[in-house]
Length: 132
Image (cartoon, rainbow, N blue to C red):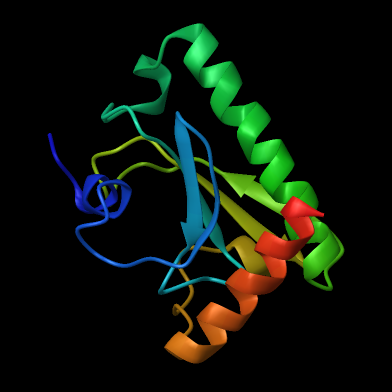
C-alpha cells in the first residue's frame, strides 16, 4: 500500500518537513488550501485513519497538537483548523490549516500555487516555532 506519503517518509521524494519523530511526520502540503497547510502522517502505512490502533490514533493527534501549536506561533491566523478526509491519498493523515475564516478550510475551492521558496520559508518558520 505504498503511497506518495510513504515515499516522503522514506526520503524517496522531497518534502518541506516541519516536524518528525519515530512514528510521525508533518510536512507542508504543496497544493495547499491556505498558506501553512500541513499534513500530519503516521509512518505506519494504514489507509483509513480509524483503522489505526487506539494508541496510535491518540499518538497521532498528540503529535498533531504539538505541530498545530508551532503553526499558531509561526503563522498569523485566528485558529488552526483540522480536517480528516482521506480520499486522495491512501495513507492515514490529518490536515492542519491556518484559519482566518471558515472558508480557509474549504477543500472544494481552488488550491493555491505556492513557490518552492515560499514553501521552504514557511516550513522554516513553523519548524523553528515547534523546536523553540
